[in-house]
Structures are given as structure tokens and as C-alpha cells.
Image 1 (cartoon, rainbow, N blue to C red):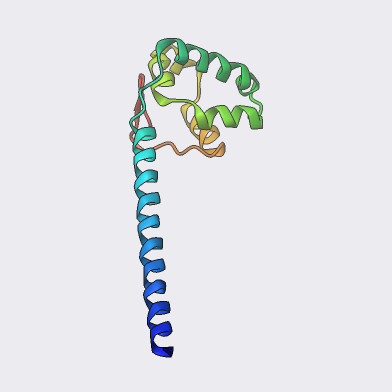
Image 2: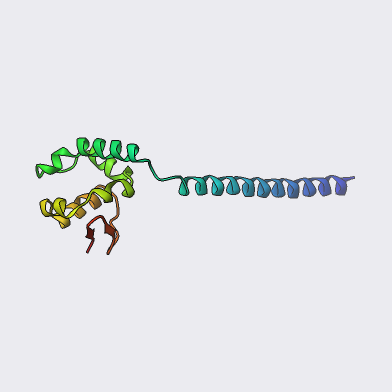
Length: 125
């Protein structure tokens, strides 16, 4: 009788382990699908990009006056879509800004700027 109880406990323990392993696989599968859905989300529309740029400019106006970015500005820098910002970077705009300062400010806000990245009319150093 004692060996039967021990056997049942071992069997139930292994079922619990199997159940937990299956649950973990299910959770990982769902997370992977959710992550894939986020990664393949459609690019923002033209209207969304225009609104994103407007909000970003309002949040970061003080930077144009050679002040440090506020936390709100840094948040906009971190969440802005590159595909919304890069098309408006023209040679005219480049003549008005110091690229190295802009990169330092962006990186200071916690967003990485890759080397040799093409964005609008510029390629980062």
C-alpha cells in the first residue's frame, strides 16, 4: 500500500512538471506571437507622423535654444518613429543644426544612434 501511494505521488509530481512545462511552452508561444505582431505592426500613417512630429517639436523647443532636453522631450525622442522623422531631414535643415550635438542629445535621452545610419539627407558618423 505504501509503495502505491509513493508511486502515485511520483506520477502526479511528474504530471505537474509536465503540466508546468506545457504551460511554459504555451506562454512562450503566445509571447512570441504577440512580440511578432508588435514587430510587424504597420508603419504610422502620414497623419500620425505629422502629429508625432508636432508633439515632438513642442516637447523639445528648448533644445533649439541650446538648453538641455526635458524629461518630456527625452520621452518623445525614445518613442518617436524613425520613419516619421527621417523624411523631413533635408540639407536645409542640416545647415541649421550641429549633427554631433544632436546625436549626443539623442543618446543622452537613452536612444541609440547606430553608426553609418542613413536618415534623410545625412549619414551618421
